[in-house]
Length: 131
Image (cartoon, rainbow, N blue to C red; front, side, top):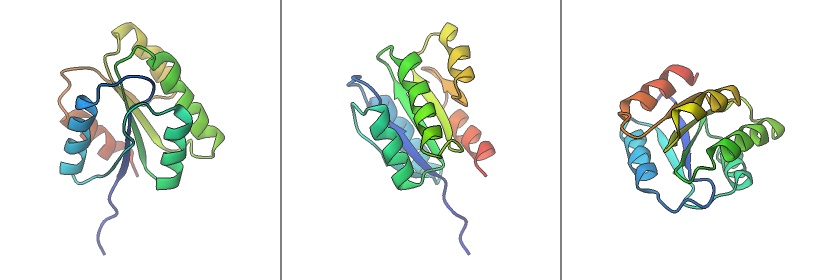
C-alpha cells in the first residue's frame, strides 16, 4: 500500500499581495512529495481554518510579509483549536523580525522561517513532525 502523502495548506493571510515566496515554497513542498493546497492571496484566518479543516491537511503553512504576523498567525492557531483541529502542525514564514519569533512560538506556531532559509529546512521539519 502506498504511503499517505503529507497534506499541506499554504496560506497567505491578511492584505499582503505578494505571493512569490509562498508559490516557491508550495512548489518545493510539492517537489518533496507533499500534497499541496494553496489558498491564494488575502485570506482571513477564518477562511484558512475552514480550508484546513475541509481539506483535512496535516500542516498549515502561512506566509506573511505585511507585518500582521503577531495577530493573524496566532488567530489561526486559536481558531484551529476551536474547530477541534488543534493537532495540525502550524508553521509560518516571511518577513518577520527576530524579536517577534519567540512570541509566535509561544502562541503555537511550531516553526518560523525568515527570508534566505533554504526550503529544505521546513521540508525536513514537516517530515520530522507529522506522524
